[in-house]
Length: 281
Ligand code: NAD
Image (tube, rainbow, N blue to C red):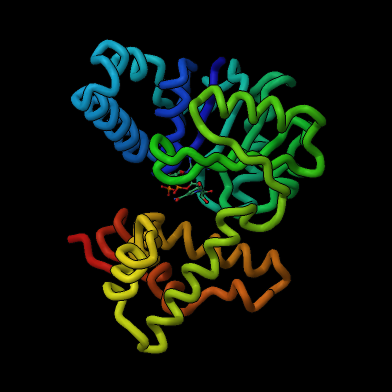
């Protein structure tokens, strides 16, 4: 299968690695040359590490990287059988992207979004053939995280969700079928986790490091809420909270915080920018 992935940031690069490892030819596209180069280096580095740890042979790592084509030319997607986007979490931008993609690909090409929170129906609505549209939502880092949410929209044709579920399973992942509702399963359940942690901080109940320590050492979480938000990126995490809040008709349970909004506005996105709740300089 030839799979096109658009957006070579944290998610797109990880997904490209997963899909190429599963044996598919992958075309990975970004509008930003540097992001594309970074993705190439990060995938190569990750495969080299796996080979050093004995989890892959050096030949397999070379073959996987060989199946990956980095490109800035969307026309190279014309023979793709599946196109999955992992670009900025912005509805009009995603809609416009699929309008362009649909002009290039065949009628049978499956179109998918890795959106964390946007309505799959609303992205599909921009397409000429919305019945071939579906959500395939990976978690960060994609090569390590097992869970993938598969989200059919109201327009998605019968049978496509099962087809995609089988495909995702063949990539070594654990797919879960969810309804097309804001944040799906995980990002909905996670909103109060982040929001309440920020409120605990704002109310002066404890500092960030103490909250993170308590949640990891005592709560059994792999990462504390502040370290995790910095890892995800406040550009992504804040937008997801805002989107879940507005999509639930301003339900106060999902209300975003000014503390995180200010980090977002300042460009303090977390690990990716060197500063978020914590400093990574
Ligand atoms: P990112 O900022 O790391 O990467 C996005 C990439 O998309 C950038 O390299 C950017 O140059 C590129 N891009 C933006 N607009 C584009 C366009 N029109 N055409 C081509 N390339 C374009 O973001 P990310 O964290 O990888 O998130 C991407 C998507 O995945 C978002 O929808 C996000 O909600 C979702 N997601 C993120 C996470 C996470 O933990 N970060 C987890 C699951 C899903």
